[in-house]
Length: 335
Ligand code: TYM
Image 1 (cartoon, rainbow, N blue to C red):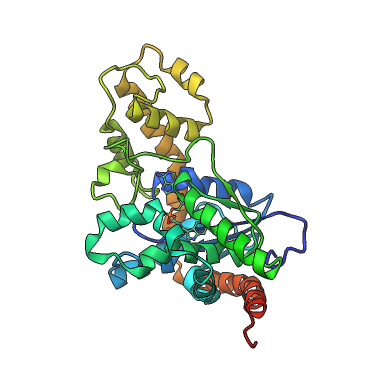
Image 2: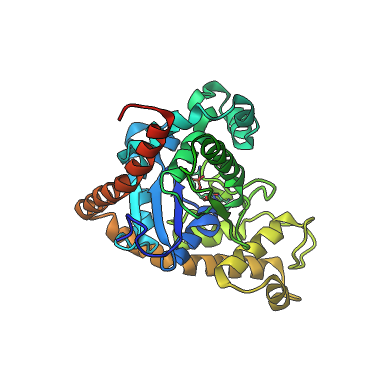
């Protein structure tokens, strides 16, 4: 059981939004590390459903995506006995602590968040306050569980820094309430780029489905998307800043095969992009196939799924409640 840190393991916390299909970027930037960390660390993982409504969601689709994301976490091989795996909105302390922390967060520092700037440009019709204050909710997600490490992709680094700043500010006023977490960002795969525009992050919210690979895509779709990936005209498999398309494919191949960049460059010396793209597509499809097979089984059994996410929320709330009440007490609320 891992609701209390009764063992000496360091703690890990991370979350993922259930907005649309999870991508190869999510897998290589974050989820792969979650799987790798579950033996060594005391881990808590959540489906961050409250975060998803910062952009408008269709209710039935959102509900389906929450189930599907939870099932996918299990399909990846995250063990619900060993880890605490839950749905964020089932533990009300997240939203509660978020309010408290928002009163210790400055408007100016939130205005600097690049993801807010990007998303408000993308959805100018719905620049809501939740979108603006989203990193405070993320800080609450993290700080409730006092993790030592937070495994995320590079795009979340700025949000993690603000979580650290908020925690430090709170601790400076009230004493030792929160642990200051460290980001845990992978060497290969921290930022997987779009297959159609390699200057942009691979994102499930991209309108062009050829730009991203879903973890649950079929083998044929995966290989087709890699065959169509945008590269350059040099036709040499070489990693270089001025070759973002091919460098992105090399990064992906390296992350799924554990081969180094120079090993890959050697392997494809004198070979064309066609051959390389096919090899990347096949390697990715081979990596994702067993996950998809397990997912197809797990998603059929809604009863077991429900029992697991309910038990996960119960385990999570025991930890979250303690931290939340400690913070409330320090501020001066009557408990
Ligand atoms: P989200 O749901 O957008 O993404 C989940 C995880 O996947 C990583 N990621 C990527 N990594 C590499 N390349 C990419 N193209 C790529 N796209 C996504 C993200 O960095 C992330 O680690 N705000 C978070 C969810 C969240 C959270 C938290 C994370 C809510 N509360 C507390 C950590 C701790 C988000 O929107 O991630």
